[in-house]
Length: 152
Image (cartoon, rainbow, N blue to C red):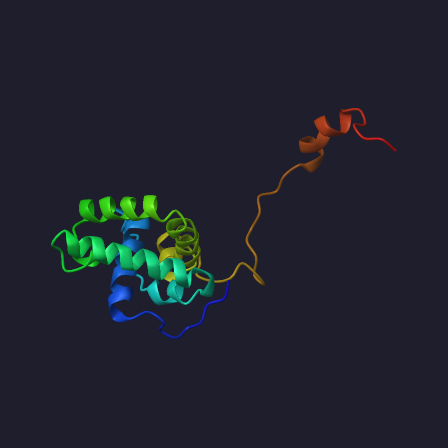
């Protein structure tokens, strides 16, 4: 799945997707930002494999919101958003699975989230992470005592 850095969503779609992202990962009580608050909409909207499903789902959300008297999906309060999101997910089962996966991927790579979780906002390599020492012989002793389970 490829993504580019240029804006691919209209301002209306970006606003709608931002509202959806905040429903997938809402702001946390411990200071964690919501996914929509981080501005991930255009990054996720640029994923080619999601483009068609995303456009159909976002259109359906805005149309449902408008039919119920709201300006658009993003203008709805939280309980209304969740209700519409559930309706669209039931009518378009391909809409949420890929979107949820990509949202989590982008969210947990964002420097603000990593810092809030106490993880340095850097790649794991080349510095690596400290591992607790362990006694591999003790951990594997039960396995080594078992008889051979395969054929020669």
